[in-house]
Image (cartoon, rainbow, N blue to C red; front, side, top):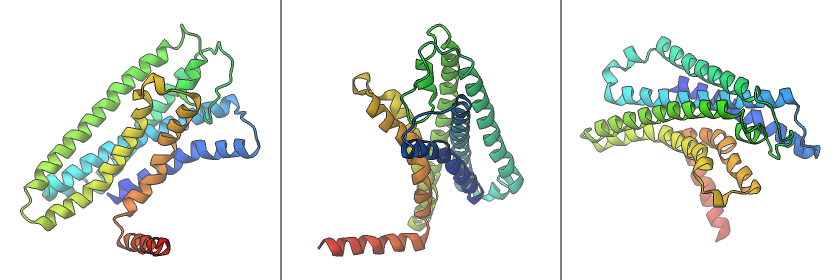
Length: 255
C-alpha cells in the first residue's frame, strides 16, 4: 500500500506542477503567453500524470481487494516484484495515452486563431480553435478513452463490492472498523478524482460560462492533487490529534 502511495504522491506532485507554476507566473508578470512547444508539453504531462494516476487508483483497488478478500495469499499475489510491475504498467499506460493524445491534438490545424482564453492548455479548448472537419480524429480518441475509463471504473466498483461483502462477514466490530479504515481513504480519493473529472462534462450547457468553466477546471486540476495527501494523512494518529487540538483552539477563540 505504501509503495502505491509513494507512486501516487509523485503523480500528484507532477500533475499540480504542470499547470499551477505557469499560471502563477503568467499572473505575476501580467501575461498570458504560452509557447507552442510549452502548450504541447503541458498537455502531454497533464494527460500523462492524470491517466497514470487513474490507472494506479484502479490497481490500488485491486490491492485492497486482495488484502481483505484473499489476505492469506496477499504476500504471494502482491509481492514487491508484482507491485513494481503494476506501477510500471500504470506509468507506461499513462505515457502511451499522453503521446497519443498530444500527437493527435497538435496535428490538427487551427482555423480560429491561437488564443485559448484559459489558464492552461486543455485539449477541449484547443479543439475549439481547430477546423471543424479535422477534429473528428481526436473525438474518436476521446470516445475510446471514455470506454477505457469506464472499464477501470467498473473494475473499481466490482472490487469494492467484493470488499464490502467480505468486511460484513467479519464477526468482530473491531475487525470491520480496521478493514473499513484501510479502504476509506482510497475510496475517498477515487470519488474525488472521478467526480471532479466527470463534472465538467455532465454540467448542463445553461450553466456554462468562461468564468465558471475555469473554476470547474480548477476542481479537477488542482483540488485532487492538493487534497489527496491530506486524505491519506488522516490515518496518522499524530496528525489527527494535532487537527483535533487545532479545532478545539478555534472553537475556544470563537467563544
